[in-house]
Length: 440
Ligand code: NAD
Image 1 (tube, protein in one colour):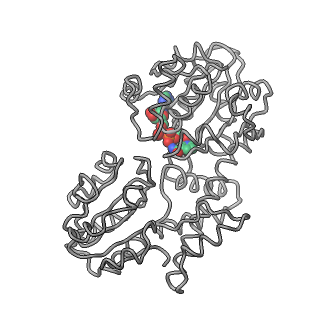
Image 2 (tube, protein in one colour):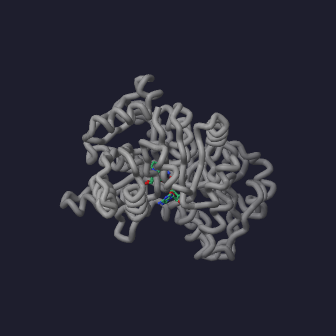
Image 3 (tube, helix red, strand yellow):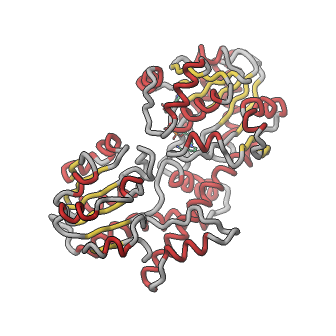
C-alpha cells in the first residue's frame, strides 16, 4: 500500500484522502487553510458531503488518515503526492493554475526521495508537463537531482454522492509515460483494480483531455435537452414524455436529460470555458462547447423571465425560493442558477424569502450584494409564508412532497414555478395554483 499526501482538502481532496485511506493506504491530507484542518482534526467536516463523516471517522480511528498544515513533515513519509487544489476560472476563461503551480513548487522544494506526483485537479492539456518543469526548477535551485514522475489522474466524482462515486468509479484514468509510476498508481487503487474497475492508461495529455471532454459532453447534453424543452413549451409537446422516450434509446441514455434553469456548479461552467479557451489557443475552435456556454447563460435568465412574464410587474412582489445550491445534497453554490435568478428578481424590486437545507451559510455571503432584498428563512414553510410566488430552484428531496394545502394557506398569490419538474402539474393545478414547469 502507498503512503500518500493530498494537497488541498476541498471537495475532491478530502473525499479522495478519506477514500484512499479506506482502500488501505496511509494518507495525510494537507491544506493551507488552518481552520479547515482544525475542523477535520476534530472530526467536524467543513463541507456538506453525505457519508464523508463516517469514512473520515473510521480511518482516523484506524490511524490511516490524518490532517495537517505542515507539508514538509507530510512529504517525509510519502511516496505519492496528490495535487487536489482549486483551478478557478481566470478572467479570460482559462483555468487559473496559480494554486497548482504553488503546490508543484512546494513539492519541488521539499521532496527528499523518488515521489510520484499525481495531478487530480482539473487542468488544461499540457499542465502535467508544466508541473514537471516547475518541480524540476525547484530541484535545480536546491542543487538536487531527485527522481520523480508526474501522473494525471482526473477525478469524476459528483458532489452530493462523492464518496460513492470515488469508491465505485466508471473508470480510473492514469496518464503517465512512466511504468514505475503506473505500477505505484495501481497499488494506490488496488481495491478498485482487484474489482476490475476499468483502468485507462494513457499519456498525460490524453488524461487531461478526457476530463474536459467528459464534462463538456455532459454540459452539452443538459443544454441540448434544455433547448428541446424550450421548444416543447412553444409547440405543445411535453418534455417529460420526450426526455423519457429519448433516454430509453441505449445509444443516448437517460442521464443528464432533465431540463432545468441551466447547469451550474464548480465544474461544468469553468471546465467548458477552459476547454473553449484551449480550443481557441490551439486554433481549433470548439463551436459546440462555445454555443453551449452561451445558451446556458441564457437559460438561467430565461427561468427568471418566465417568472416575470407570468406575474407581470415584479416590483414590490414577495417571492420564495426553495433550493440555492447548484444541485441537491451539497452546500456548493458556485455558479448556481439560483444566484442569477435571485439577482434578476432583486434588481426588479422583488423581496426574496430564501431557504436551502445546506447552503444557507454560503448564500449569506454569495448573495451579500442583494442582502437588503433577502430574508433568510428557517425552513421551506417559513420561506413560503406571505409570498406571491414560490420558485423551486433545486430538487432537494424535502421539496418534492410539500404539503400543498398548507402552502396554499400561507401564500398570498398562488404562482408555483417548478424549475426542476418535480411535481405533476395536475397535482398542483388541482389545488388552485398557477403551475409553471420547464418544457410543458
Ligand atoms: P476546493 O476549492 O473545494 O478546494 C481546494 C483546496 O485547496 C482549498 O481548501 C485550498 O485551501 C487548498 N489549497 C490551495 N492551495 C494549496 C496549497 N498550496 N497547499 C495546500 N492546500 C492548498 O476545490 P475542489 O472543488 O475540491 O476542486 C479541486 C479540483 O478538482 C479542481 O481542479 C476541480 O475542478 C476538480 N474537480 C472538482 C470536482 C467537484 O465536484 N468539486 C469534481 C472533479 C474535479
